[in-house]
Image 1 (cartoon, rainbow, N blue to C red):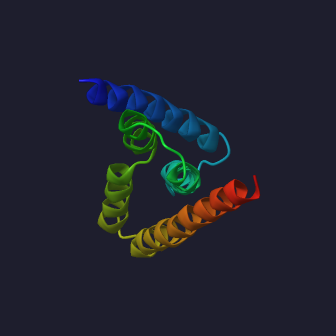
Image 2 (tube, rainbow, N blue to C red):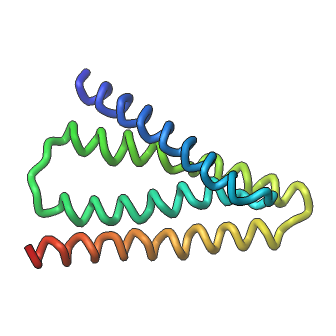
Length: 127
């Protein structure tokens, strides 16, 4: 039961963070391109890489891992919204926007996971 509660609490925090990120990004853009989802996913990629590298060498409980990675970051990032937005681009005859979004999200997202991981492992080695 504690594992379920850890994921639920983390998910609530992550979802709230995603909403706040969307509001912040929305205030800078009135574009039809889904910058809000892109920002949440890319920030989430960086954070998961950073935290993964940091916690790889520390002993933390499985419950805390579930809270952080499955709950907070799972609630913060938004693959289902990403998929829906891409289908919407295809439906409205905007395949270039869809393909650009897919490429940018995946290439930069993977890069940010790697960068976050490298930064955190470097910081651990230097301390």
